[in-house]
Length: 178
Image 1 (cartoon, rainbow, N blue to C red):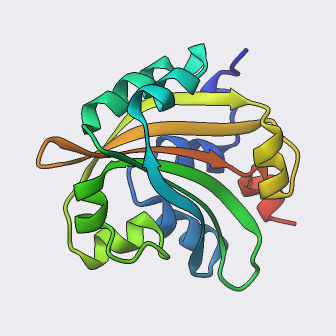
Image 2: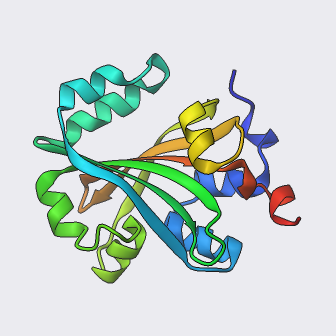
């Protein structure tokens, strides 16, 4: 059962519902640059990706179909460049042409790439999720439950990418003040 958003820590709520670049928001929050650690990038089968989505994430599966083929998946985790503390796990799906065109520096966060390219984008929030995820807990080095979201990033009204982000509970205001 998903808690009411009003009960969510204000910092996490801002990250979940905010419109700015996630990397820029994280950097302002922890007061250090954000670094991306690329886990993998590769071509994936659209139908296979859609088929692995749980029932609670069927909107994400439908949104992947808006990107066209061939479909590429990029998985990263973001951390503070100095502290190296894991803050977020993210998966993004791209049409292969868009990935090559708009993400020239795959070792950097998406937001940094788009800012460098001076690309105007609009974020359309499509889903919020709350729950446990053992692989993410290991990656973020902390127990859940986790808050996550997925959104479409649009450029000139057309889907550029679908992004799924899982936030570390360490980003809660209580944890940051320690």
